[in-house]
Length: 156
Image (cartoon, rainbow, N blue to C red):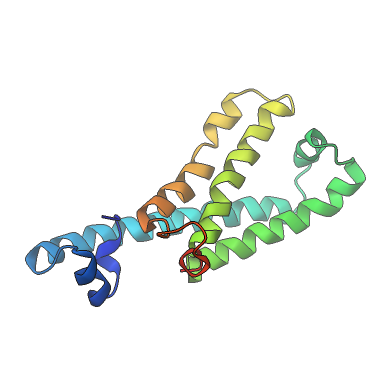
C-alpha cells in the first residue's frame, strides 16, 4: 500500500483495499502530515535552489565548467536554470505530479555531485543529500504509476 493511499478518493481507496472506518481515521492525520511535510520540504528546497540561480551565484560557474560550459555561457544559463527550479517548485506546491518529482530527485543528486567534481570536498555532497532524498521520499510516498509508460499516471 502506498503511504498516501489514505488521502485518495474513497472509491479508489476501497477498490485498492486500503483502510476504512476507525483505522482510516487514525491513519489520515499522520499520512496528511507526512504528505505536507514532504511536499513543503520539496518546495522550499527547490525554490531556494532556484533563487541562487536567479541571482547567478558565482560559485556555480565552476559547476557548469565540469560539463564543459564556458563561463560566459554559464552566466547566461544559471538564471534560466534557476527559473526552471522555481517553476518546478511552484508546480510541486500547486500539484505535485510524479513526473516533476521524478525529475527533482536525480537533479538534486546531480547538483550535489557537482561539488566534488568541481574540486570541493565530498562533504558538500553529503550535506546536500536531502536535495535528492526528499523528492525521492515524496515520490515513494505518492507511489509510482502501475506502468512506466502510463503518461497519465506520471501527471497525477
